[in-house]
Image 1 (cartoon, helix red, strand yellow):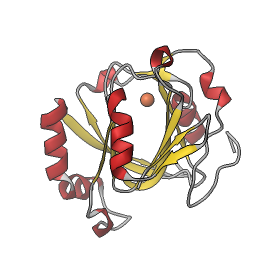
Image 2 (image 1 turned 90 degrees about the vertical axis):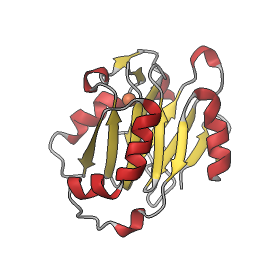
Image 3 (image 1 turned 180 degrees about the vertical axis):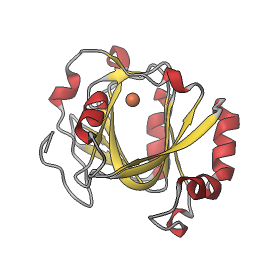
Image 4 (image 1 turned 90 degrees about the horizontal axis):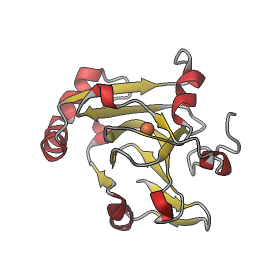
Length: 188
Ligand SMILES: [Fe+2]
């Protein structure tokens, strides 16, 4: 189950219904998919895509996504820090960012535009689906286990290039994950 944290007050939301309701005004979808424990950790990408074909097809129809793939990030992934440094600074995309977490966890931060609300984080874990709509100012960190395996849906893969805001807002918030391991400082 995901955890939403309002970073300035440290208020947290852990109930799926409350999280969905909180995120809806920002156009962010949050949903749970049950049954994710049935896949072994070493499942192949095609096995993962086959196991979740039904929700994938539903989301594709709902959001106009045309392709799906599986990203597999582990501590031993080559050039991991270079990859992570592309996405841990505030940015937006011309394409929705849709992730369905199969294994591991990750931490999105969202900075509502025009100060429509405070900066908040969304820690996503296995069985969580999130859609961050195009144009949303956000950044992403891994947690201390530096592991995430996720299905990604795309309308157009070329649209998923980060555009940096350069606001520096991301430097004001250390990435804090709740579990299973706590990440005390950025870059460690
Ligand atoms: Fe992004």
